[in-house]
Image 1 (cartoon, rainbow, N blue to C red):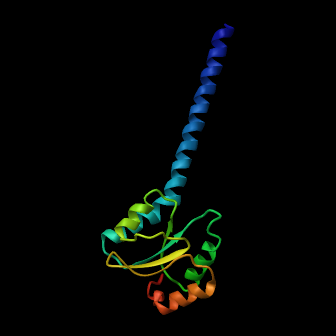
Image 2: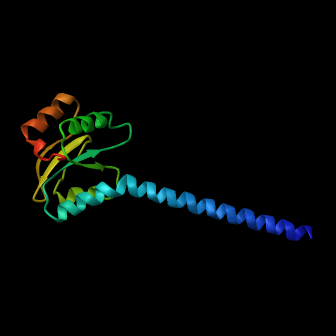
Amino acid sequence: MEKNEEMEELKQKAFVCAIVFLFVVIIGLIFIFNRFGSDVDAVSDALRNDEDFVVFFRSDDESCSECSMVEERLNAHGVSYYNYDVRVGNFSSLLEKLKIDYEVLPPAIYVIQDAKVLYNITNIQNQEVVDSFIEENGLEEFSNG
């Protein structure tokens, strides 16, 4: 009788482990989609539809110490933009679509019109440069409202 009880206990533990594993995988997939999916797909859709838009290329690792400052300045000016992490797998294909054949160093702001780069600034180092770029190129017209 003890062997059957041990087998039942093992089956229950295996079942609980399988449920926990599935739960973790599902949560992980949701996190990955929410983290990289929405703006990445939105940029591709905007390019396909020849929309005019602003894209902010960022990297969330230590190499982009100024990324949060640039994001704050874009938000302060009310600029509507797509937030694009350069570590995403299809970043190189986006650069090909935009005919960008040079290295893009984040933080970078690109203004896209008719699926072509109109204005850009890369490797931004200070707040004054961001503010000047936004004002000189009229990025306020890409507003949230």
